Length: 198
Image 1: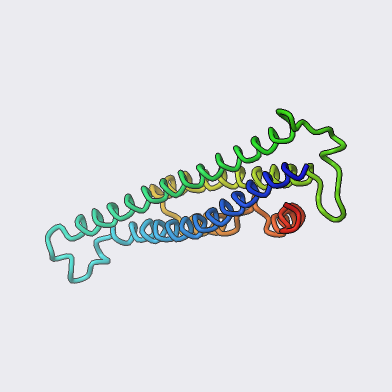
Image 2: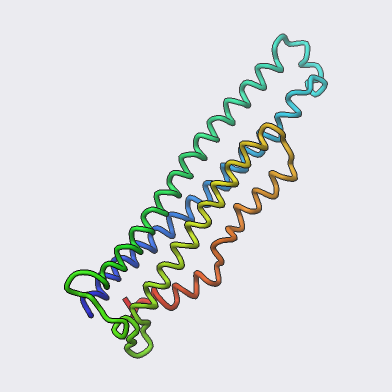
């Protein structure tokens, strides 16, 4: 049992690292989304010739400014795509960790009974608690990744018909991360990832 707990410690430490990476990507995605939203909101203003004032006398200024903004938007959208690929990589890593953790207690010479999985030593959680907590965290992040994918897709649709109200709502959805309730995540970490447990 002690050997299994040590193996879990390695998995839990890796899981924590992935959670920190997720938060870094979250900050990056919010910044990228804000930048893309700003450009999308500007496109209507840029497309209206009366907004150029004395600059409208310069031949082709509207097209040049519009082209530059579209190039910037394309660059940002490509970076958002890369960020989403990084989120997906984390989701796949978390899925593998959960799968490997289940296999650790179910397969090979270590096969544990239900009673052993639910056994507690003092205040420490059972292996079953650890597995369940890990699975819940993985499910939260998978759901949140799917939501982020939908929000990014919606951003592309809104780019064709800009609406600052819709962009604001999507931005808030990204900031909130509704599928990852902070209190619940913290509770799972308190139960499952306490330093003296694993």
